[in-house]
Image (cartoon, rainbow, N blue to C red; front, top):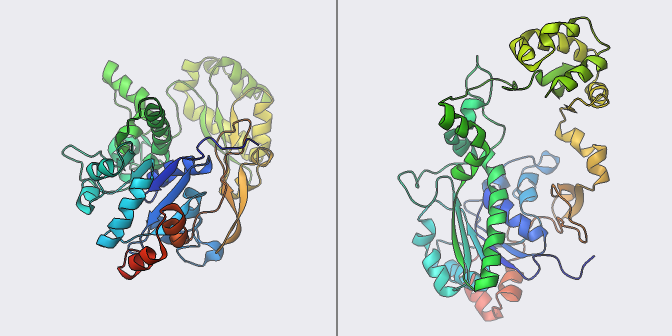
Length: 405
């Protein structure tokens, strides 16, 4: 293990909430940064009141949804509607290297902690503002969640089946995409500051970040004027391509045949079934033209076998295939276990629970997560005293004035 982690010494004030901001700062925290997560008792972060709750017992400190996004951080509660709370926020901003927020555009300015104030307190600060539509423009005030940004971006129009209404990708989709862009953007801003001494203001629209993953469809429309719509799990260039029913209740295996060689492998895995020898299926054009027939016959073969048996048989012939796993399956996945993906951490309220790690490994150090997510207000005293250097008298005055939410 090295003496220091990559972001050790980096100071982050995380005023964001729900998904995008906290996931972004989690990258920095898990890799060594000192991250202070700023919250309020009213309103609570939405994820603190959303399940799943440990043992099914609700509570703001019992939800793994919040816990997953806030590992390796310190937690403090501030009342940002109280001048005393804003005074503490100013001290935190003066201390930090990176200031992240995800309020509706204009809110931080109204509170007195906008970029103008932040840069006057800390000229080299890097401030990140992330919201659905960006800080300016006719729809800047549009408030919502990643579900809404995903719909506006166009994901819901292209996800689902042609004979059913738009279905959309599962979860608040842009919440899962945006942090990957933002973490890299922050690293670039930190490198720029290292070289020039200058800070940055980053205006990150989750809609625009989400559009990056629709680049092929946007290019297709720009070049050919073609607008795609819902087509189930089918592909324009591969067939068969989809999730096929397997033995057992609601068990599935995903299969994708990219070329003629893989089609030959699929035929061998099925024992060269008579139906698969049909010359109409020998090339991609023929398979694409007869997908209904192929899927019907292939489903009969998969339905007689377990998902794992289907996957193993196809992989042995070089055909891309994967068991459709549930979260409970992932907990037992031998590959994830081998790579130490899940980390068991001892949370003060929930006890020992598994936390997902990162989707990559870097030689020479362990990226974390290093500590469980904080309880609500768990580190109030530590942050005020040890991080911000407040005296006992200043701390008492702040509490009496209502700074601590």
